[in-house]
Image 1 (cartoon, rainbow, N blue to C red):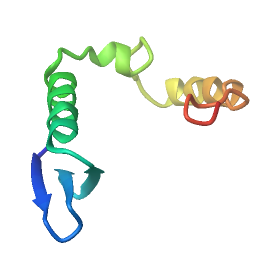
Image 2 (cartoon, rainbow, N blue to C red):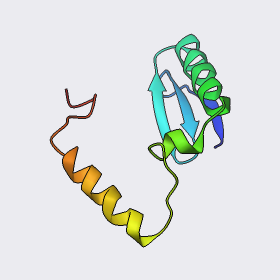
Image 3 (cartoon, rainbow, N blue to C red):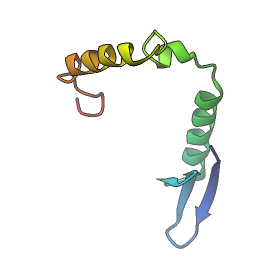
Image 4 (cartoon, rainbow, N blue to C red):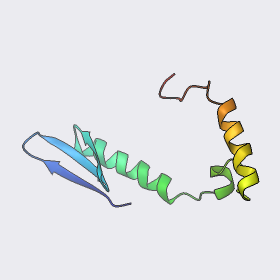
Length: 82
């Protein structure tokens, strides 16, 4: 992911670009803090097993189990929705 900060003089804002995404900030300090936290998280060690729900995908038989698990969780709210 390409992450960089750009000052927009026209709007007096600081923009952090992440590939095709842009986030606006009021100050350069806010923008730099965001970039620091983001790059720390991006560079942190990640476990594929943890990201994949604890068990690797083994084939079509596991696909049905995964869909059943997602259906059971459909009534839960995302943190942003709560």
